[in-house]
Image (cartoon, rainbow, N blue to C red; front, side):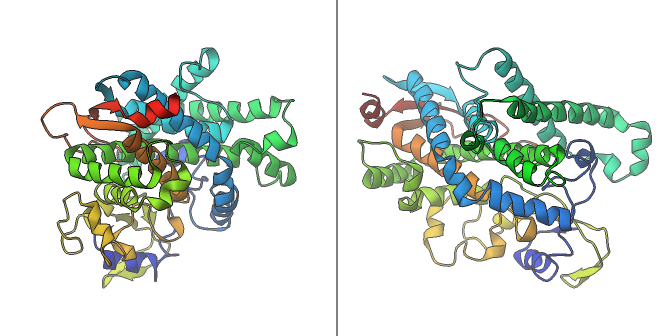
Length: 430
């Protein structure tokens, strides 16, 4: 069942919220997500509720995110300095997606494991590990973004249709080995004091394991790490790329955002994460980007646990539910100039205020617990890019806004732009 209207979404996630709180047992979840026991893949029940509690209180709480504010600030400064090295004197062409992926990957891995995996100073074993892990994450996103016919026609699994099972099993083993090595590395660190051990997510989860070893098994910890990395890298980098693409096609919006930053922050210092509350127009740009380019255009599939009714139609148990967020966000019945990029729409009362017509991070019990982290990273990075650099298209032609394939709907054509450092970068570095 595919729902494509706010009224149907409301019915699915209010009256039938518990009914649709389950996940279908996908082949990818079996071999990659520890037999469908991770937060994103587990069905509704005591185990899932406990994982949700851990993620809400111990991983993505405001207090935990505040602990890592310095990491996000450091990595964004490194990213800006890299841009500055290309464009300190004149406009220079840059391909943004690889740089944004490097940024988000480093932020997440420093929060999770306490070390960078990209950058000139990363060498030897860490560099090889980083390359291996990035390739594994890319494979997982590719497989997750394509339907496997064996999930719908189980007899195809008997003879491994198109070799999918063999590839996924191998990928699952490689991913598990990498995550286990991360955990073991933390255990072997004899120098870690009780204070420093709380400075990474793995160390914090290992502390919880010491107090409740029967529940916080290595498998539970690896599943949480996997979900954090998958949710926190590709989607944030993709949203930033879409946002910059829209801004380059709408220079008047870019100029308005730059003026807001200059007015609120000035040109003597760089913006900080805490400044986001003073930048409503930058926030509206991000909201409008998420409307037109949601990181999960169909969300993750839900599964009905019992019969119910949606829109007057009878729904059988074990029915798959897909929410067509992409269509809802572009429905002209609910949005004025639905396919136009207009951040100003969110300045008007009523536009975007109805819960069920704007759902980039899902809804109900299975909504994304990491949305707070995503909003911080995207807002801080986008605001800093606008504040510190002048931006133009690489040619007179408009940026190609075609959508590619994959779980997070990436751009079909990677964004190339030209930028030049503004005086603020020189002031900060001098």
